[in-house]
Amino acid sequence: MATRTSGSEARAGETDRPKGRHRAPARPYGASLLPVTRRTWAPRGHTPMIRHHFKWKRASMAAGLCYGSRGGGAQLAFHHQLDAYDTDTLIGALGQLRRLLGGQKATLLWDGLPAHRSRMMWAWLRRQRSWLVVEPLPAYAPELNPVEPLWSNLKGVELANLAGDTLDDVIAAAERGIQRIRHTHHLAFSFLRYCGLSLW
Image (cartoon, rainbow, N blue to C red; front, top):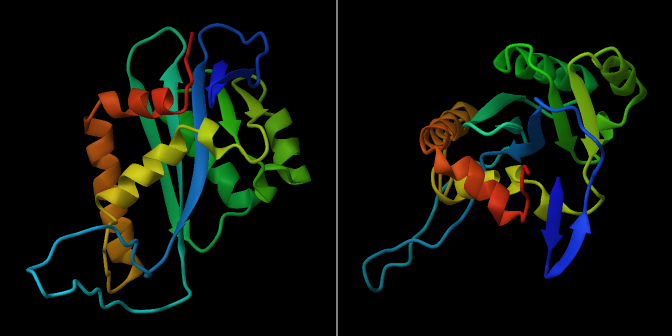
């Protein structure tokens, strides 16, 4: 997969991949009851205010954008749970990704989250080689991950200025955003182009 970053050319994970694989960049995101503040409007002289509940409890969400190597549409995998991801829960999420892809082969691009690098994870990944190849993204390069603009899009629309009473409210809003993105077919490829990436 060719990449271009800030005017200079770079190539990330450029290996000979088997044809017919899906490319699936993935990235987790943490959500809480603290609102994601965005610019909004109010009558002149009335400063907009957001009143919210403050709790440390968080929900974790993971998304994967799945692109077919031979063209066609893109798919969006989404998983959420309370608290942080660990190796066991990420393995469960990858099992759901396999079901979404109908058992087709995939190349997974992801970052250096500690749970991605654990011994248990690498042992599990070795047993999945019949369908899954993993290629790490370069360190400190979120601009190369198409899931980053997906989260930004979600935070700018459904999660913007949301003062939910519970984490269920936040998760429900995120799920509405995921459905919107799934049904706006050009967005998945817009996220890819935003990162300067190409499938061919």
